[in-house]
View 1 (tube, rainbow, N blue to C red):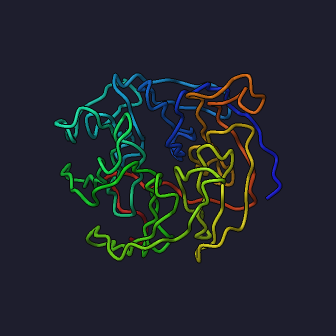
View 2: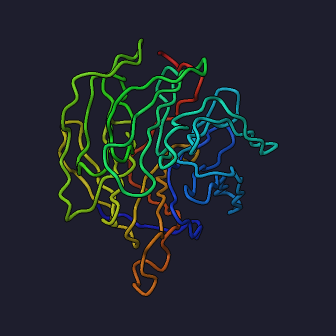
Amino acid sequence: MPVNVELVLDARAELGESPVWDDRRQRLLFVDILLGHVHEFDPATGHDRIFEVGQPVGSVALAAAGDWVLAARDGFFRLNPESGAVTLIAHVEMDLAGNRMNDGAVDARGRFWAGTMASVGGRDRGTLYRLDPDGSVQRMLAPVSTSNGIDWSPDSQLMYYVDTPLSRIDAFNFDLATGDISFRRTFANIPTASGYPDGLVVDAEGFIWVGLWQGGALHRYSPNGRLLGVVNLPVSLVTKCAFGGPNLDDLYITTARIGVDEVKQRDVVAGGVFLVKPGVCGRRANRYGAVAPGR
Protein backbone atom coordinates (compact mmCIF):
# COMPACT_ATOMS: atom_id res chain seq x y z
CA MET A 1 0.00 0.00 0.00
CA PRO A 2 2.21 2.87 -1.25
CA VAL A 3 1.36 5.98 0.76
CA ASN A 4 3.31 8.98 1.97
CA VAL A 5 4.13 8.76 5.68
CA GLU A 6 4.47 12.12 7.45
CA LEU A 7 5.73 12.79 10.96
CA VAL A 8 3.19 15.27 12.34
CA LEU A 9 4.27 15.29 15.99
CA ASP A 10 7.73 14.40 17.28
CA ALA A 11 6.21 13.41 20.62
CA ARG A 12 9.09 11.13 21.63
CA ALA A 13 6.55 9.11 23.56
CA GLU A 14 7.98 6.24 25.58
CA LEU A 15 4.88 4.18 24.91
CA GLY A 16 2.46 6.10 22.70
CA GLU A 17 -0.91 4.35 22.38
CA SER A 18 -4.70 4.59 22.13
CA PRO A 19 -5.18 7.34 19.52
CA VAL A 20 -8.77 8.53 19.14
CA TRP A 21 -10.18 11.48 17.22
CA ASP A 22 -12.33 13.90 19.20
CA ASP A 23 -14.74 15.08 16.50
CA ARG A 24 -16.19 17.85 18.68
CA ARG A 25 -12.86 19.45 19.46
CA GLN A 26 -11.14 18.37 16.20
CA ARG A 27 -8.17 17.08 18.16
CA LEU A 28 -6.27 13.81 18.34
CA LEU A 29 -6.06 12.23 21.77
CA PHE A 30 -3.49 9.60 22.69
CA VAL A 31 -1.64 8.37 25.76
CA ASP A 32 1.96 7.84 26.80
CA ILE A 33 1.27 4.86 29.00
CA LEU A 34 4.15 4.60 31.44
CA LEU A 35 4.50 8.35 31.96
CA GLY A 36 0.80 8.64 32.76
CA HIS A 37 0.26 11.31 30.11
CA VAL A 38 -2.81 12.04 28.00
CA HIS A 39 -2.01 14.12 24.92
CA GLU A 40 -4.43 16.42 23.10
CA PHE A 41 -2.87 17.27 19.73
CA ASP A 42 -4.32 19.97 17.47
CA PRO A 43 -3.21 19.26 13.89
CA ALA A 44 -4.35 22.72 12.79
CA THR A 45 -1.89 24.52 15.05
CA GLY A 46 0.61 21.80 15.94
CA HIS A 47 -0.02 22.43 19.65
CA ASP A 48 0.23 19.38 21.91
CA ARG A 49 -1.31 19.73 25.36
CA ILE A 50 -0.31 17.15 27.97
CA PHE A 51 -2.43 16.11 30.95
CA GLU A 52 -0.78 14.44 33.96
CA VAL A 53 -2.86 11.54 35.25
CA GLY A 54 -0.51 10.58 38.08
CA GLN A 55 -0.33 6.88 37.22
CA PRO A 56 0.17 4.75 34.09
CA VAL A 57 -2.77 5.17 31.71
CA GLY A 58 -3.44 2.54 29.07
CA SER A 59 -6.15 4.18 26.99
CA VAL A 60 -8.38 7.21 26.56
CA ALA A 61 -11.85 7.39 25.02
CA LEU A 62 -14.52 10.02 24.48
CA ALA A 63 -17.50 10.46 26.79
CA ALA A 64 -21.00 11.73 26.08
CA ALA A 65 -20.64 14.69 28.42
CA GLY A 66 -17.67 16.03 26.46
CA ASP A 67 -15.03 14.82 28.89
CA TRP A 68 -12.84 11.75 28.47
CA VAL A 69 -12.78 8.32 30.10
CA LEU A 70 -9.53 6.57 30.98
CA ALA A 71 -8.36 3.04 31.66
CA ALA A 72 -5.47 3.59 34.05
CA ARG A 73 -3.40 1.49 36.44
CA ASP A 74 -5.95 1.51 39.24
CA GLY A 75 -9.13 1.32 37.15
CA PHE A 76 -11.48 3.56 35.22
CA PHE A 77 -11.45 7.36 35.54
CA ARG A 78 -12.85 10.51 33.96
CA LEU A 79 -10.65 13.39 32.81
CA ASN A 80 -12.03 16.92 32.44
CA PRO A 81 -10.25 18.54 29.47
CA GLU A 82 -11.05 22.03 30.75
CA SER A 83 -9.71 21.71 34.29
CA GLY A 84 -7.49 18.65 33.98
CA ALA A 85 -9.23 17.09 36.97
CA VAL A 86 -9.15 13.28 37.16
CA THR A 87 -11.97 11.53 39.04
CA LEU A 88 -12.47 7.86 39.81
CA ILE A 89 -15.30 5.84 38.27
CA ALA A 90 -14.36 2.38 39.52
CA HIS A 91 -11.32 0.57 40.86
CA VAL A 92 -10.05 -2.51 39.00
CA GLU A 93 -7.60 -5.15 40.26
CA MET A 94 -6.37 -3.13 43.25
CA ASP A 95 -5.32 -6.45 44.76
CA LEU A 96 -2.94 -7.15 41.85
CA ALA A 97 -0.11 -4.67 42.31
CA GLY A 98 1.81 -5.89 39.27
CA ASN A 99 -1.04 -5.31 36.81
CA ARG A 100 -2.14 -2.24 34.87
CA MET A 101 -4.84 -1.47 32.33
CA ASN A 102 -4.04 -1.28 28.63
CA ASP A 103 -5.82 -0.51 25.36
CA GLY A 104 -9.58 0.06 25.12
CA ALA A 105 -12.52 1.28 23.03
CA VAL A 106 -16.22 2.14 23.34
CA ASP A 107 -18.96 0.07 21.69
CA ALA A 108 -22.06 1.45 19.94
CA ARG A 109 -24.12 1.31 23.14
CA GLY A 110 -21.65 3.47 25.04
CA ARG A 111 -19.83 0.76 27.02
CA PHE A 112 -16.06 1.18 27.48
CA TRP A 113 -14.02 -2.01 27.09
CA ALA A 114 -10.42 -2.25 28.33
CA GLY A 115 -8.23 -5.01 29.66
CA THR A 116 -5.28 -5.54 31.93
CA MET A 117 -1.81 -7.02 31.72
CA ALA A 118 1.17 -7.69 33.96
CA SER A 119 3.51 -4.69 34.03
CA VAL A 120 6.60 -6.90 34.03
CA GLY A 121 6.51 -10.35 32.44
CA GLY A 122 3.98 -12.99 33.23
CA ARG A 123 1.33 -14.49 30.97
CA ASP A 124 -2.34 -15.16 31.64
CA ARG A 125 -2.51 -12.58 34.42
CA GLY A 126 -4.89 -10.13 32.75
CA THR A 127 -8.63 -9.75 32.21
CA LEU A 128 -10.81 -7.93 29.70
CA TYR A 129 -13.37 -5.68 31.42
CA ARG A 130 -16.47 -3.77 30.33
CA LEU A 131 -17.36 -0.47 31.99
CA ASP A 132 -21.09 0.10 31.62
CA PRO A 133 -22.66 3.58 31.47
CA ASP A 134 -23.93 3.22 35.03
CA GLY A 135 -20.34 2.88 36.27
CA SER A 136 -20.50 -0.84 36.98
CA VAL A 137 -17.64 -3.08 35.82
CA GLN A 138 -18.16 -6.47 34.20
CA ARG A 139 -15.46 -9.14 33.87
CA MET A 140 -15.73 -10.33 30.25
CA LEU A 141 -12.73 -12.51 29.37
CA ALA A 142 -9.97 -14.21 31.35
CA PRO A 143 -7.24 -15.10 31.42
CA VAL A 144 -5.46 -12.87 28.90
CA SER A 145 -1.79 -11.91 28.75
CA THR A 146 -1.57 -8.51 27.04
CA SER A 147 -5.08 -7.21 26.44
CA ASN A 148 -4.82 -4.99 23.40
CA GLY A 149 -6.66 -3.85 20.27
CA ILE A 150 -10.44 -3.95 20.31
CA ASP A 151 -13.11 -2.69 17.89
CA TRP A 152 -16.36 -3.76 16.25
CA SER A 153 -17.63 -4.40 12.74
CA PRO A 154 -19.79 -1.58 11.31
CA ASP A 155 -22.96 -3.59 12.02
CA SER A 156 -21.76 -4.44 15.56
CA GLN A 157 -22.23 -8.16 14.88
CA LEU A 158 -18.54 -8.90 15.50
CA MET A 159 -15.96 -7.80 18.04
CA TYR A 160 -12.28 -7.98 17.07
CA TYR A 161 -9.71 -8.44 19.81
CA VAL A 162 -5.95 -8.85 20.23
CA ASP A 163 -4.09 -10.64 23.01
CA THR A 164 -0.63 -9.75 21.72
CA PRO A 165 1.46 -12.84 22.66
CA LEU A 166 -0.98 -15.05 20.72
CA SER A 167 0.20 -13.41 17.45
CA ARG A 168 -3.29 -13.21 16.01
CA ILE A 169 -6.49 -11.20 15.78
CA ASP A 170 -9.55 -12.94 17.20
CA ALA A 171 -13.22 -12.39 16.42
CA PHE A 172 -16.23 -12.88 18.69
CA ASN A 173 -19.93 -12.84 17.99
CA PHE A 174 -21.20 -9.68 19.66
CA ASP A 175 -24.66 -9.04 21.10
CA LEU A 176 -25.12 -5.28 20.92
CA ALA A 177 -28.18 -5.25 23.16
CA THR A 178 -26.59 -7.12 26.06
CA GLY A 179 -22.87 -6.52 25.46
CA ASP A 180 -22.18 -10.25 25.58
CA ILE A 181 -19.46 -11.96 23.53
CA SER A 182 -19.39 -15.57 22.33
CA PHE A 183 -17.87 -18.01 19.81
CA ARG A 184 -14.27 -16.85 19.92
CA ARG A 185 -12.23 -17.84 16.87
CA THR A 186 -9.10 -16.82 15.00
CA PHE A 187 -9.70 -14.05 12.47
CA ALA A 188 -6.11 -13.65 11.20
CA ASN A 189 -2.78 -15.13 12.20
CA ILE A 190 0.24 -12.81 12.10
CA PRO A 191 3.67 -14.40 11.64
CA THR A 192 6.10 -13.32 14.34
CA ALA A 193 8.54 -12.32 11.60
CA SER A 194 6.08 -9.52 10.77
CA GLY A 195 5.91 -8.26 14.35
CA TYR A 196 3.33 -8.64 17.10
CA PRO A 197 -0.25 -7.37 16.80
CA ASP A 198 -1.02 -4.36 18.98
CA GLY A 199 -3.88 -1.88 18.73
CA LEU A 200 -6.51 -2.11 16.00
CA VAL A 201 -9.31 -0.08 14.43
CA VAL A 202 -12.05 -0.89 11.92
CA ASP A 203 -12.62 1.51 9.02
CA ALA A 204 -15.92 2.56 7.43
CA GLU A 205 -15.73 -0.32 4.94
CA GLY A 206 -15.34 -2.89 7.71
CA PHE A 207 -11.63 -3.53 7.10
CA ILE A 208 -9.34 -4.03 10.09
CA TRP A 209 -6.12 -2.04 10.63
CA VAL A 210 -3.63 -3.34 13.19
CA GLY A 211 -0.30 -1.93 14.38
CA LEU A 212 2.70 -4.26 14.41
CA TRP A 213 4.91 -3.99 17.49
CA GLN A 214 8.51 -4.69 16.45
CA GLY A 215 7.19 -4.89 12.89
CA GLY A 216 7.41 -1.25 11.81
CA ALA A 217 4.12 -1.38 9.93
CA LEU A 218 0.35 -1.35 9.81
CA HIS A 219 -1.57 -4.24 8.28
CA ARG A 220 -5.01 -3.88 6.71
CA TYR A 221 -7.22 -6.98 6.62
CA SER A 222 -10.44 -7.59 4.72
CA PRO A 223 -13.53 -8.75 6.66
CA ASN A 224 -12.69 -12.33 5.63
CA GLY A 225 -9.24 -12.12 7.22
CA ARG A 226 -7.18 -11.60 4.09
CA LEU A 227 -4.15 -9.28 4.29
CA LEU A 228 -4.77 -6.58 1.68
CA GLY A 229 -2.31 -3.82 2.47
CA VAL A 230 0.82 -2.90 4.41
CA VAL A 231 1.89 0.60 5.43
CA ASN A 232 5.57 0.69 6.39
CA LEU A 233 6.68 3.16 9.07
CA PRO A 234 10.16 4.58 9.74
CA VAL A 235 10.10 3.18 13.31
CA SER A 236 9.97 -0.31 14.78
CA LEU A 237 7.36 -0.06 17.51
CA VAL A 238 4.02 0.73 15.87
CA THR A 239 1.17 0.62 18.36
CA LYS A 240 -2.18 1.75 16.94
CA CYS A 241 -3.92 4.02 14.43
CA ALA A 242 -7.05 6.17 14.38
CA PHE A 243 -8.96 7.94 11.63
CA GLY A 244 -9.35 11.68 12.08
CA GLY A 245 -9.68 15.02 10.37
CA PRO A 246 -12.91 16.76 9.29
CA ASN A 247 -13.71 13.97 6.83
CA LEU A 248 -12.19 11.10 8.85
CA ASP A 249 -9.83 10.36 5.98
CA ASP A 250 -6.58 11.10 7.83
CA LEU A 251 -4.98 8.10 9.48
CA TYR A 252 -2.92 8.95 12.57
CA ILE A 253 -0.46 6.38 13.91
CA THR A 254 1.09 6.24 17.37
CA THR A 255 4.46 4.65 18.07
CA ALA A 256 6.84 3.97 20.97
CA ARG A 257 10.51 4.39 21.71
CA ILE A 258 10.87 2.32 24.87
CA GLY A 259 13.99 0.17 24.59
CA VAL A 260 14.79 1.18 21.00
CA ASP A 261 18.32 1.69 19.76
CA GLU A 262 18.52 5.35 18.81
CA VAL A 263 21.62 4.63 16.77
CA LYS A 264 19.42 2.82 14.28
CA GLN A 265 18.31 5.31 11.67
CA ARG A 266 14.79 3.86 11.52
CA ASP A 267 14.20 4.72 15.18
CA VAL A 268 15.42 8.33 15.25
CA VAL A 269 11.79 9.51 15.31
CA ALA A 270 10.49 6.66 17.46
CA GLY A 271 7.63 7.70 19.70
CA GLY A 272 6.30 10.13 17.11
CA VAL A 273 2.80 10.45 15.70
CA PHE A 274 2.58 9.83 11.97
CA LEU A 275 -0.03 10.63 9.33
CA VAL A 276 -0.97 8.85 6.12
CA LYS A 277 -3.77 9.34 3.59
CA PRO A 278 -4.90 5.76 2.94
CA GLY A 279 -7.70 6.58 0.50
CA VAL A 280 -10.42 5.23 2.81
CA CYS A 281 -12.37 6.78 5.67
CA GLY A 282 -12.88 5.82 9.25
CA ARG A 283 -15.89 6.01 11.56
CA ARG A 284 -16.75 8.54 14.22
CA ALA A 285 -15.57 7.26 17.60
CA ASN A 286 -18.28 6.09 19.97
CA ARG A 287 -18.70 7.93 23.26
CA TYR A 288 -18.94 6.38 26.70
CA GLY A 289 -22.49 6.72 27.98
CA ALA A 290 -24.04 7.47 24.58
CA VAL A 291 -25.85 5.23 22.13
CA ALA A 292 -24.53 5.69 18.59
CA PRO A 293 -27.07 6.93 16.00
CA GLY A 294 -29.21 4.08 14.67
CA ARG A 295 -28.30 1.78 17.59
